[in-house]
Amino acid sequence: MEILQYYNEDAKKIVFCAFALGSKNEIKKFYEFNYKDSLEGNEINIGASSLLKWTSKNYNENDNHKNIENDGEIEKTYDVLVRKGDDLDFIQNENIYLIAMDVEGLEYEVLLGLKETLKKTKFVCLETGFNFPRESKTHEANDVLDFMKDNNFSLLLCSSTETTILPENDGSFKQFNLLFENKINLYFLL
Image (tube, rainbow, N blue to C red; front, top):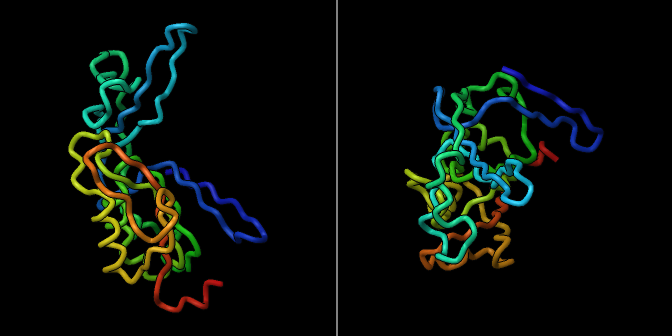
């Protein structure tokens, strides 16, 4: 397992890991989604790589990505190590100022695996949304919000509404960032 640590005077330590985070330790299939550029002939990653298989069912009919998964050459798969965040040795004795994640639809599962770590975390910023283009996705932004509230975090900002209110779930694919703050006084992190 590769762990890269970057030290900075302001941030103190930033850690990058060469594995996926989830709710338990396991090996899972990772899906990478690319398409061939018809003009250039090269492969382009459509930014949809994930541990969940991509689907365009929630896209509008006129969207460029609608039904693109029907092209057999678009999908590549790899087996990857998934680790439960609370089991990572290098964060056991650390106070954490910020956890930032963009995990393409698995934010709820990653948060489940970080439940103990969240108790010593000041801020969490994550990308989430409604009706993500993923097969087998069972949790939406409301579930993430409820989980965070149940774990003593308050929502500071939703990027799409610029308030503490989530956008309406109208059945279409919506993606936005949420910033949470731990309500418990974590003065030792500052």
